[in-house]
Image (cartoon, rainbow, N blue to C red; front, side, top):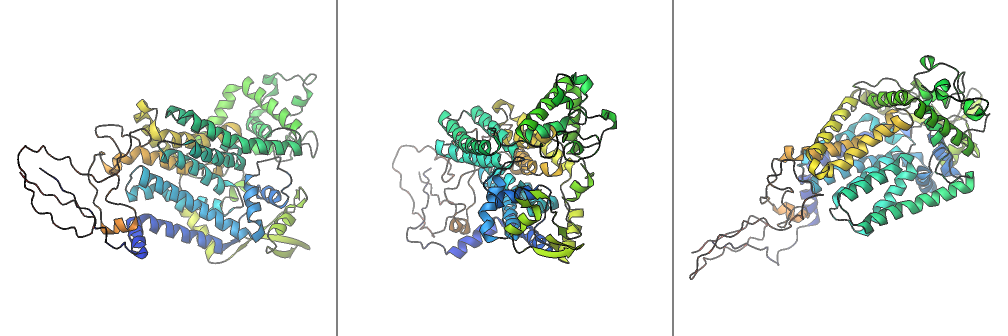
Length: 576
């Protein structure tokens, strides 16, 4: 049999731009509808809570943007750099809008990666993006003047780039390294993600030049920031709070008797000993770091001595001694906080004030007048956004950080009581991803390994080094969704077999599916399902069955039907 394939006529006019756009929207209509509805929810949030919501950490970030000459001792200034970039527009409303776009951008990355790279159907890729699009706590976190929306976008962007490209050039490695540097400068926990990516690339036998370029591109900005930090604070580091935060982690179980601290020889460590026995201490370590109450020892050296290089070093030494002396107690608290992430409900933790800062508030927000680097927290906010309303309350001029508007605020409060991702669902997603890693054990987890490890690590790291906090869970959600979706993709679409895809004129016009579109990825007969990152090259071209052997002899082909100009299935004629 001789097969003749029609070719599109070269004189066929290209479809109009509007036709291509309509075809594209139609092909992705489910996700586009979800994205539009999610955007509407964010518009309602901005109408109900203007210009933005505030958390206790917000003021330090704003101070860093108003006074960019000095790095913060508490946390890296990456988010403050973003605020500084937007500062000429003097609007916290714009900051919130940009962060909402970042949240929607995370959903677009998830959908694109799963749809294009891993060939999930539209409904499957959309389902994986739903928690980012519609979780009320995700929307609320995007509306806070906080670094989390930026951090999540950077992390998901890095994972997307690594999984998208089967073979990475050193230039792409350098781009990923720069993104990892921004991630680490946004939140310190971003630096270990570099290690995960490097291990993953080593498993995939990536060229050493690519890995070296990535590490170099990440290291240079981080080292430059640390040098700037040293010029201001005297020590080569990114913060002066990592030891203090670890002290908070150990404060609930540290027993100086078991630690064998001798006050005569180790006075600095002894001053951090908490007098209350562990059985009578508060259920949250926040009390022993931030709250100046009885039993709190972190401020034993006096006001102004906290978050200095010396205090950070002492607190770190105390915490390490506690962990080494009481390893089982430490592991018990880590396990308890890790499992706290998977409750069905949402118990109040670590305290009511912190918990309520993750809820859409029923009242306006008056900014506190706490002391800051060069002024106070409310004056810093007014310097950044002079449009913030000022009201006279209790015979004082106070800055209003958040104004409520009905009925929009009430709608979002009701929405948050109903629409959220329960912790137990996050646990199920992680178990599905773990099963996907196990099914690909011959390939060391395949493409599932990286998002699963990153999600698992983002939940475990705060439990091991700080304390459970609800906002620490949200960066892990999109990665857990990615890992679960990649694990289940053959369950969505059935066995991966090479078959021609039905191509419509609208697909050709939109530039999405073409006569040379890739066939579904995978290797037939692979029970675990082949990952695009570990299989051979994807064949780009029409899926045409191989011609049958032709017997020798004169062959007189029949007439070929002229092409209609559309990219329909190939026209075949047999002869002989």
